[in-house]
Length: 166
Image (tube, rainbow, N blue to C red; front, side):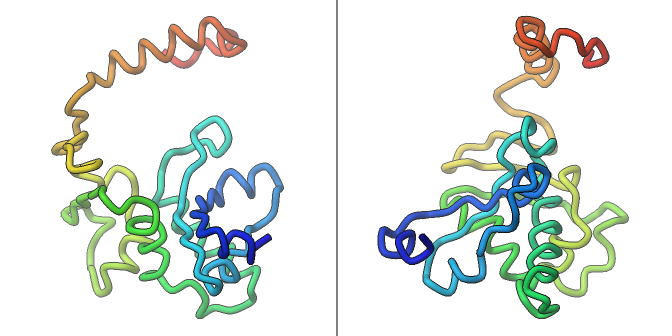
């Protein structure tokens, strides 16, 4: 299967949080990458991975793969950041603020992103050149409107029993 993915130039989204939560195992990412397959990190959405936090996925990816391969030098932070950024979205840009206490000191920016950063450190987000988050605020949507729309949709599903979402 890995060779077929390489031959067909298939891109792979590695959703480590979702896969491990569902006990699906750990994808053979080292093998895929050695065969030239482009592997980016994904979250698989909050319903199956409980988070859209790519920083959590970076730490999980690094930890699970080092453990699975029994190789502490596998998946260095710079490679994890590459998988979380350029491998998954060539036209997107995320700017991380470094003023928060968890971001200091920065000896190696890649290690800081993998081991210290959280979603709350994201300052700006551009997708295909369009600014969607600026100074930690949604540009095109009001967060409360998004929450209310989601709550209304959830009321029409089995989630309606979960009253604590307001």
